[in-house]
Amino acid sequence: MNKVVKIVLNILIVVASLILLVSIVNLASSIKYVNREVEDPAETYAGIFDYLLEKRSYGEVVDDYHFQRRETFDPTTGYENLFLVGEYGHDAFMARVFAEMGDDSRASACRERMRSLRGGMGDYAFAADEIDEMIANAP
Amino acid sequence: MVCENCKHEIGPEQLYCPKCGAKNAFAEKHRENMKQFAREYASTEKEVSRFRKAVEGLGKKAAILVVLMIAIVICTVITSINYADPDEDAAVRRDTEKHIKAYLQQTEELLQQRDYIGFVSFRYAHELQSFPPEEFERFRQVGYVAEEYYECVTGMEEMILRSDDPDYFDGLDSDIEIFCMYVDGFYEVYDVQLEAEKNEVYQGYIRDMEAELLAMLRTYLDMDEAETEAFLELSEAQKAVKVREVLRHE
Image (cartoon, rainbow over all chains, first blue to last red; front, side, top):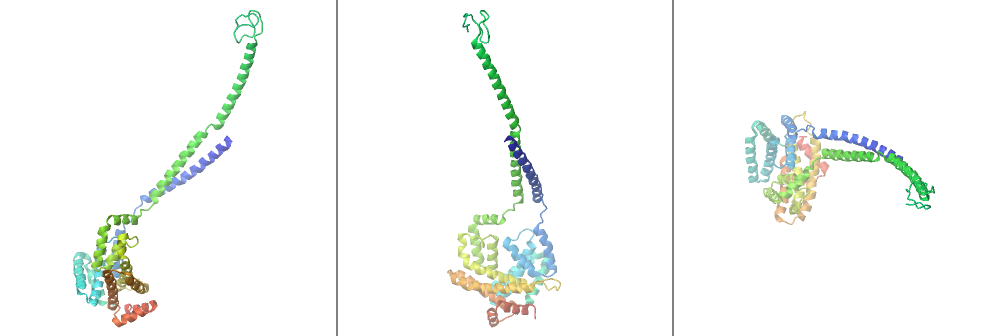
């Protein structure tokens, strides 16, 4: 009887040792995972943003702006330029809609915001010109 | 004790009386008893030693097993914690519960400014769209319509401001199909929610969204009121053909 217990215990110890070995390997991988280099999405997006501007793809820029705004309503670090250009594009788009509706107060509020956004664009002021041109020539 | 024969004092282990030489019965029995005791003692000792040999090391092994199991549990728990991703949505919901009054006021202000795009974005950013607290129940109808309006406006914006670089894949055709689906979706929601909305101010917002949508179609699809009305009567596929004609200048 005791011999059987001893054999069973030996087997259990071997099995537990193997499981522990696997657990240690998993633990090591998980520690590696925790300390992995995490890409800063804002930094990654900065490159995409410049590419989109280069290609004059303001539709994508405005779409990204709306997406980002649904994540964090106010501009977050690293996305300031996206919020400036995106909001400008949205206001430029809506200004024509309000003008068509005959809602001068909302149309001029849009234009006022556009002026203020353009002032903060710095090197990206060319984007405002291009958006104006695209909106004016649409469809 | 004394000798049964001569009453001379003798020891319990003396087999014969030193004086008269008579046999000491007690000593004889005592000797037998001692022999029996020695035999039993030897047998018990043997048994104990055999048992000790049998169980020797069992405790140690059990202890090793317990230690191994505890180590496995600790490793597993730490591994799970390391791999677990933080629930960011839960953090947003906690923040919303904390600032519910301020967010309620901000939501109302966005509607008053008739910034429906901001209204939808704000609700998403604070998880008010998917998990609206009771206080936000009053925005239910206007929220449904605003969501469809949001998709139509942002979809049209994306198409109008698309890249004119021929080497850039703009995915315009699929955008057009999605846009037409949202326009139909807007009208499906519009009538139902306008009827369900009892608040006149909010009814005004819902009507305003439709007016903006119509103005947007007229402006960016280059249509007059009659053409817009006719456009809305078309099927989703026919709408897509019409939008493609305008935006692709076909």
